[in-house]
Image (tube, rainbow over all chains, first blue to last red):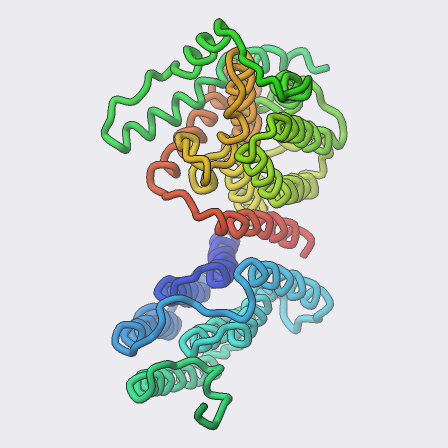
Amino acid sequence: MKEWVDIVLIAIVVANLMLLVSSRLAACIRIVAVQGIAAGILPLVMHPSEIGLEMLAFSGCSIILKGVVFPWLLSRVLREGNVRREVEAFVSFSSSVIVGVICTGLAFWITRRLPLPVTVLSPLIIPVSFATIFIGLFVITSRVQAMTQVLGYLVLENGIYVTGMAFLVQQPVVVELGILLDIFVAVFVMGIAIFHISREFDHIDTQQLSKLRDN
Amino acid sequence: MNNVALIPAGTMFFLSPLLVGIINKTKAFFAGRQGVPLLQAYYDIYKLLHKGAVYSRTTTWVFRAGPAVGLGVLFLAALIVPCGSTGSVISFPGDIILLAYLLGLARFFMALAALDTGSSFEGMGASREMHFSVLAEPAFILGIAALMRQTGELSLGGIYGSLSPHLWLSAGPVLIFVCAALMLVLLAENCRVPVDDPNTHLELTMIHEVMVLDHSGPDLAFILYSQCLKLWVFGTLVAGLVVPAASGNAVLCFCVFAGSMAMVSVITGVVESIMARFRLIKIPLLLIGALSLSILALLFQVR
């Protein structure tokens, strides 16, 4: 099953890079959804011998949340809240890709020096999860709109989720469910907040939020 | 010198214009047209060889040398790339660097010939071609470097000889990334659709086509043929990776190889049919994407 794990991990890495180059918010939402689905099926392909009701429920839960519910919420905001459909960034797309590759390289460099408590199935899991976390952080910091920050947050969570998957042997399901719940609340609140902000004001540009007075 | 490889290498010089024909037929199929004949590239080259060349008075010997140098250099480059698992005719450790520099030399002379005409359009084309190749070249070299590290071989013939379906299972991620990067480089270097439209003749948007506007007759035939060879060179690198034929039978090997080359042309044709050309400012992004795929392939290996 190592090949399937590798394919899922490749999908996650490619989704990271595609998120950094795509200039349409709708495409970004779709990419993050695909990444969430890939992360969701990871436990199933990693431990095919241990597939039980608990694992299926857990995996199905995260796939439905990340692949259906979050994208639906976010695209609703995109459709109804008066949001610009293009990604606005402080960093150009080309530089973003280069930073993404540097993040991935950094992740590989760090994880080579990181002693692991357990042996993991594929040596790629930990570096890929770290790279996803770094790129999620980069997306949060380098993009202007509130929507892209939510997406960066989701990517960050995907990275944490994949890290958790590497140590699934120790049953971190409870922890994972807790994180998922946090994220769900975050997206829910952010989705509603963005929706309301954009109804009250005519933009959801976070740059504008740092200025308090009218000009 | 690898004498066994001379036979597939010899057929290559005859078959390379066919790749363009396959691409055009695929595009015609998608558009629901009959399309130009499969052998149109041969007809074009034949026709052009029988015409006289017209040289502008402002041009010097550089303009005349460009197509000839390009053809000679690509001839040599085509001998370096391996045809299937029979290996390449000329093979030595590090021949990838020679290959990259040969392609660079051909490009350099093409750009010089374009600049020599003094036409502002051709200068623009030369500038664009150089700009995009600066980004495509590292993607190409790093992709092959990843393959070198994976197989432990230093020559192209050795690398492609030691690829096997087994390697795809054990090192799938690396090969997938290299394959995608090389395919993007193929599209960029051969002026295929997401980067450049080979059919367009609008000076403001075209890249390669604008550089050869002033060439005529046999010179243009040389350029057309060296483009076919270039497509073949990059095609072999992709095809050999996707379909690693490692059976002992030389004839079977060559058939598999020819089939995979046809497949690469069909894929190129499909990409051209279903995609629109990118805006000029988007192309560097595509090539940086190819570069990052190559770097990822290297990273996935070092781990």
